[in-house]
Image (cartoon, rainbow, N blue to C red; front, side, top):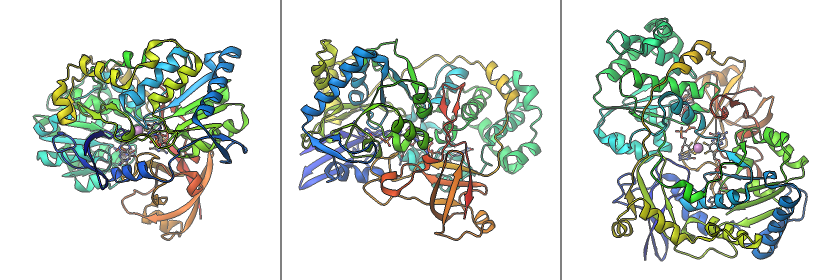
Length: 612
Ligand SMILES: Nc1nc2c(c(=O)[nH]1)N[C@H]1C(S)=C(S)[C@@H](COP(=O)(O)OP(=O)(O)OC[C@H]3O[C@@H](n4cnc5c(=O)[nH]c(N)nc54)[C@H](O)[C@@H]3O)O[C@H]1N2
Ligand SMILES: Nc1nc2c(c(=O)[nH]1)N[C@H]1C(S)=C(S)[C@@H](COP(=O)(O)OP(=O)(O)OC[C@H]3O[C@@H](n4cnc5c(=O)[nH]c(N)nc54)[C@H](O)[C@@H]3O)O[C@H]1N2
Ligand SMILES: [Mo]
């Protein structure tokens, strides 16, 4: 039998998958899907393995040991939900709904899996998480400077003659977009201080000094102003950045900068794909504005890719409640320190791996009297801290629709198997909880099937085609572009580059994992990578164990000497599970936030020292 699945992971590509169930389960990329185009990425290697894994949770767990110790007893789902419902009722009665915080994110981006649970929390009027650990700052920046963060449809890549990947490693994180770009025949630039696989595969790698992107933009703006591409209000600032000065500040050659600027001016259809990893810095939002200002000067402000919104009725999916108070995700430990929260309800996310400043977050969870519920497929580090753990279904076990923040195809995800044991989908969990709480609102009980029909009807999707192909193209939500560079100019005037002693620590995305997911199923890369010159200066050899420390904490790990990492920078991949490897990079990442950019994370603005 063949089914349509859809990758629901937090990734640009949102692939349409053909799942064949004969002797076992095999997955393939849907050949008809224009972005998936018949192949799947390396991380999909673990999807079937994760679904079938012996490590999957099949029973609910109730804590019997100390918090974090990982000692639980197995109970029936019904008993676990009774306990959770009683606790919620108690908190509602004695303290009020604003003492309950759902902590959730994009572990499953299915329209139902991601949004339906919010109907429950909206009905109760609980606190709400401000999702700020990923792309928030850059999105906010784009909205401020041009009124939208939704750029152009990547189907346009085939019409482009110049594609700039700025602060993104698409050969790893957006492999289908990268493949499209390579096929298009366009000249490809990668702007990155590291020699990534994308940099290796690009026509031109601008190996910029770390955190010097704003200078590159100012230098290019200065140069192209000679050819009539001007942002008049910026002239006073850009005038100071001639080619010589820009070359010094960025480490790029004068000819390289000139060639880049000329290519941008001469291109009929340039596209700049602005990445996510590099905007997780103190000046991240501002850098995104700077890159966009280049497109404004070129009179092509819409020619970027960042994220995408579609004409999907999210208010219907979540049943909006505008009165919920926001709690920031990127510095959750500090937020919980201030607030008197009584319950965390955690699903679709693994905060005790993924959030910065783990030492503080864990300390608060150990010290404060907070009841913790976790719904997950595995006994993650977060689940180890729970009072109640509920087993979750895999995406082969429920019906859903999956959109993309990159392309414009909505994918079908069909239920193929029943969940094992007591595992429940996000949808079914919140239906059951609503029943237990005696809630009456109809929207809390709407079936998967009805929600899917309503969304497809709303979007005017041709149903026959959709079920024949497994996907449909839908409308991108377009806001009018309204250029406003006034704030940007003020910020540039006050801009200070980050300067501190020690190494800059980048924690980046690995090709094989998907954030922390599946890192319990294979040997995760736990090396710290450093430049050979730095290693020599500290007399460090390959595989030596070193201590990396700062004001947030310290970790010990082994070194890989790697010339693709620039001097003065250390690189660790995100996502290792402390319960398996004893540490994770977030024990030393900063929980500083970009205050004026919707409190977006600055975790890649971490400075560390090393001890040999
Ligand atoms: N295989 C795989 N794909 C994924 C994911 C995954 O876990 N695995 N995760 C998904 C998610 S959640 C996200 S957010 C995206 C992230 O996708 P990306 O943004 O591609 O990921 P990062 O590796 O965090 O950062 C990208 C690049 O920014 C560069 N960079 C760092 N500092 C600077 C700088 O000062 N200037 C410039 N120009 N560049 C700099 C880094 O060297 C790095 O190569 O990927 C998604 N796709
Ligand atoms: N140091 C450092 N930290 C980072 C980053 C970095 O670059 N460096 N990147 C940040 C970024 S970009 C992101 S997006 C975040 C991601 O961080 P998280 O939001 O923690 O994402 P995942 O690690 O993918 O964890 C998702 C969890 O959801 C579970 N899950 C999957 N499907 C379902 C489901 O259907 N139902 C339920 N209930 N659970 C499910 C998975 O098993 C997994 O435990 O990490 C951030 N943290
Ligand atoms: Mo992300």
